[in-house]
Image (cartoon, rainbow, N blue to C red; front, top):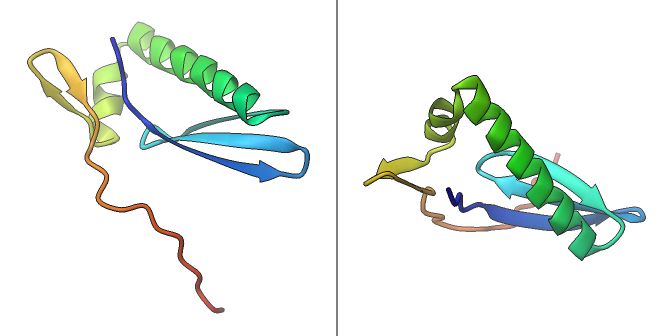
Length: 87
């Protein structure tokens, strides 16, 4: 099975953080590439654990994925924006 995600990567101190959306799984590494690799592994483990528990379909549906002809399609991104809010 192939699951599409949108990945955001940013730096926090000496670590890079990789965040997969809309599944909301994160991991980190010392480089951008290491963060991507760690995120891929975290996603595989998360999805396999959910499949083993019998909750994968429910989780994907809650994240906005849709099943079409046996394949899961990710929700369409409408925008990626950066906002600043004064407080």
